[in-house]
Amino acid sequence: MSRAPLSPEVVQTLLKHLSSDDAFRSAFAADPAKALIALGADADSVGACNTPLDSLGGKEEFARAAALLSERLAVTGPFKVPFMFESGLKGLQD
Image (cartoon, rainbow, N blue to C red; front, side):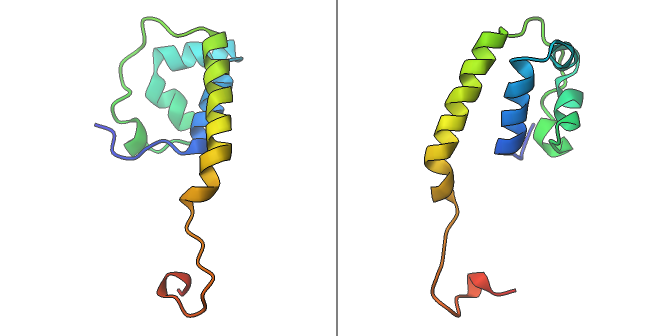
């Protein structure tokens, strides 16, 4: 079972390739884990992705998903990183 989530960068790259690259789409359908690792995912993230896919969504579906993800990351991404401006905080020291 997968324990680590895919990074936002890997997910965006994945959706970009699934929406435009026929060779990648074929490789992903045949071996999702291998295709994800080629995009930069680590083995822990793709542990459950070992079954070839019988069917794959259309390019347009993935293009819409990529647009929605980019929009969501633009809105929520900056708020996921805690910024601490007070000097001497333990979280800011080595």
